[in-house]
Length: 246
Image 1: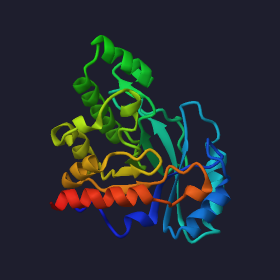
Image 2 (image 1 turned 45 degrees about the vertical axis):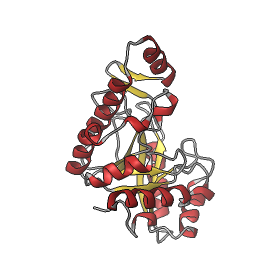
Image 3 (image 1 turned 180 degrees about the vertical axis):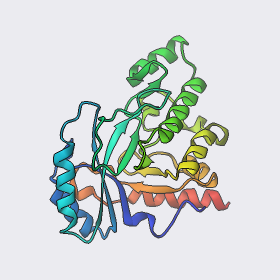
Image 4 (image 1 turned 30 degrees about the vertical axis):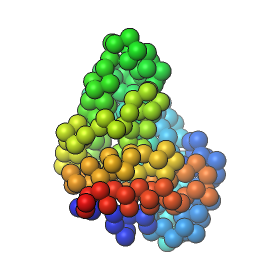
């Protein structure tokens, strides 16, 4: 499947409101989606296991649905915790339809590590770059399989943690990506091209596209005026398609 589609940029898979760390309230985010001409807006406010705002959040999204022609998806963004693919999610996800799977920390066998800790392990030889990359891909693939039943999902800002940990995405190849690509194909989970963090790289996007993984656009907007704005994503999709067809 070609990584580029005329429909993909009519949806923003990654947005935030002031229910978590977004600057603007839900109504302004929805209005921005309308102004951007979006058909679908996936709301992905941050959660952790101890998050308590979900009932109010779900109620607000439900109320907003009757005020807009944009299809609103009530989602959350959750951290991948470890190489088993555990997700930092509340137990009660009533009303939550979608989960964005995020590498906010580096998922290691013993839990999520700050990128500085990964840098230290690399510097001392306790962890090699190749092993670190394999762990991250394995964790993300398992997180795809760990999405709670009845919810859709996507992989958010894939590899955004790599430069923070001193690792190079250029070392990622098709063989390394295969477990993730297979999980995404099997479970129908797309990978987001993230406008804010400009990742994954077009080269990686092309590898995923060749492997049959659907690519989607996410602004990662924390302000309403960034919703549905995709200059880097458009360029990255074009480059990824050129790589796929060359």
